[in-house]
Image (tube, rainbow, N blue to C red; front, top):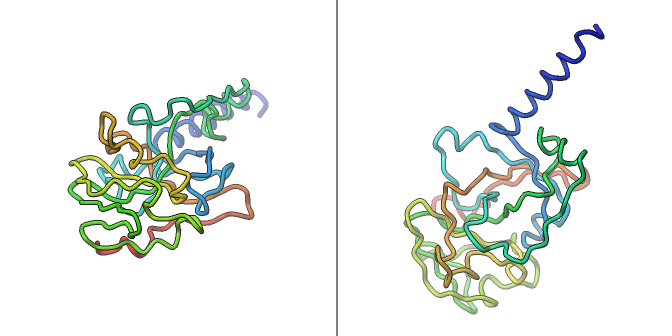
Length: 211
C-alpha cells in the first residue's frame, strides 16, 4: 500500500487541478464592495463549468472576472508563501495573487441602463427593486452616469455596496466604457462556503426575472 501512496497522491492532485481548471474554484472576497451580500474575507465557490457549454452570464448573477483594464490600478498585491501558492495551484484555497474582481451583473449586451441621482437603477426602462444593496447606500446617487447602452458580448456590473464599489459607473470615461467583456468572466459565484456561520447560496434576485 505504501508503494502505491505516491501514485494515489499524484492522482488526487491531478483530480484537484482538473476540478479547479474546469469545474469550480475558490475565491476570497477582497473588499467591502459587495456588502452585505458578501463580506471581506468570505470565501465563495465559482462555477467555471457552465461557460464551457456556451452559457453566458445573466442579469442578477454574481460573477468573478478578470480586470478589463485599469480597474485595479493601485490595489496592493498580497504575496503568498510557498504553501499558499501550492494549495491555491490545486484549488484548495484562493490565490493571494489573483487580480480578479467580483460584482453583480446588472445588464447584458443589448440592454439599456439608466443610472440617475434620486432614482432606482432601470434596465430596459424597468426599475430594479434592490433589497440586496448595502443599507443606507443609494442605487446611483454617488456616481450617476445617465443612460448607457451595453454593447454585444459585454456586461454592465455594479457592487451591492454602491457607495463603496468602483464598478462600471466609475470607468465610463475610460477605454472600454466601463463594460466587462463576457470573455473576461471566470465564472459565477454560487455559494458562500466560509466562514461556516455565513454559509449561503447566491441566487438571482427576483427583480431580474422576466426582464
